[in-house]
Every structure is written in structure tokens, then in C-alpha cells.
Image (cartoon, rainbow, N blue to C red; front, side, top):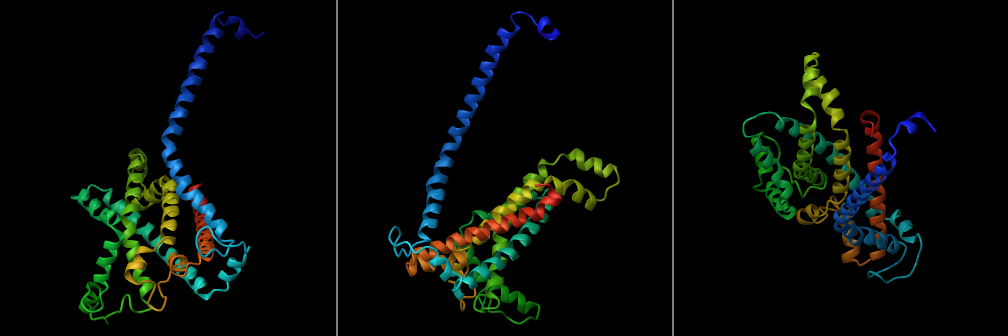
Length: 313
């Protein structure tokens, strides 16, 4: 028996047990409340994400022509995929689209967020204007850009003519169509990333920035050594959501080019759509979906590795 035990009042242990039970009851109540609040989202994820995902994996090993029907053929769909020039081209275009759009959109959105985090006149209006494309229907966005890219009277060619440059067949030239859609992808996703970065910038303590300034750090040194590390979790979140979004680009392609010209914009989701709902090769399209998910996971892992050394993720 220790000295502390001898000095403890006789009723202290008895008093601590009810307190411990009350604390345990409160924690259990909080846990129940947390699971109750999560239940709708979890139910949605199970029904509309997990179960369809598992079904897609199963169907990818069958020759199903209609969902739920078909015989088991093992890895034959995957063998056929990597011998299919159209699939490989669609995968290549999707990777190019992602590699081009994601870093450019992240960099521009961070620049815009830093600018709109300053005390400038009308910043609330500018924030709203940058966010409007995010809440606008993708079909409406595509219609606007169809007018901009109109080869006869579109704004894009008018700007080129103003500077004395040759007109472009933006969506009719196989060499230009995919880069033209990349521009739209960057523009449309800018607002969502900007809002996330803006919220993260406002969560960084002003005291840290003030201390760096008093120590004689320049604006760039303050940003690189104080602001940038403070954005570490946000960088990864924006990267993950951006990669997932860029791999799912479909409606923009469907409305503007329909995968053309000459399959120049036939990205992976559009190829999946064509195989599943036009050719009714459900098993084959499911295998494409699984491959797409694998590549999304690989790119996210590579992005995490690239950020880990600097950000400590």
C-alpha cells in the first residue's frame, strides 16, 4: 500500500466510480449520436456506391449483355481490354486530361483564393462569380462553351482574329478538341477548389503570419514557410477530389463533341457509356470501370507520395 493510498479519503474511491460510470455513459451516448448522424450517409454509400461497385467487379468477370445475366469467363474481359486499341486510346486521353487539368486547376484556384483572401473592394462579389460555374448545370456550361468555340461566330475565334491569329476549329479539329475541353474543365472546377482553399487560408492563425513578417520574412517566404504547410491536408483533399472528378468527365464530352472528332475526345467514361448502353456489353464495360478505379487509386497514391515529404501526410 502506497503513501497516496493511505492519504486518500476513505470515500474517494467510491465517489470516483459513479463519476467514471457517468463519463462512460456520456461517451457512449455521444458515440450513438454520432452513428445516428452518420447513418443516412453510410446507408447511401452502401446502397449506391459499395453494392454497385461490388456488382461491377463481379460483372467484369462475366460476358453479361444485360445486367445480372451472363456466364463466368474469368479474366477474358481484361485480356480483351488491353488488346483493344480504342480502350487504350480512351485511357490515354483520360490520363492526359487528368494530368493537364488537375495541377493547373489546383494552382490557379490557390492563386485566386490567396487574392480573394485579401481586403480588396468587392471581394464577396468576385467570390460569388468564381463559384457560379460550380453550381451551374454542366449541360448549360457546355452550351455556353459551344457558343465560345463556334468556328464561325464564336468568341474564341473573334479573340484570335483580334490579335491577327488564324481561326481554329476548336471542337472540330482532332488536334485541338481535347485541349479545348481541358480549358473548360479547368474553368468549371476552379470555383470549388477556390472555396476550399479560401476556407483553409482563413483558418491559418494571423499570429503566425505576423510573427514571420516581424522576423523579416518576405511575402514569398511567409507563404512558403507558413501558409503552404498550413494547407497540407487541404492539398491532399483537393488532389483526391480533382483526380476523381477528372476521371469522371462525361457530360461535357457528351454534349459538346460526342467523343469526336475522329474519337479525339473519347475519354474513358464515354467509352464505358458506349459499351454499356449502346453496345450492351455490360461485362466489358464493368471491366473498364474496374480499370478506371485502379488508375484513380494509383494516381491518388502517387499524389500522396509527392506531397508526403513536404507536407508530412
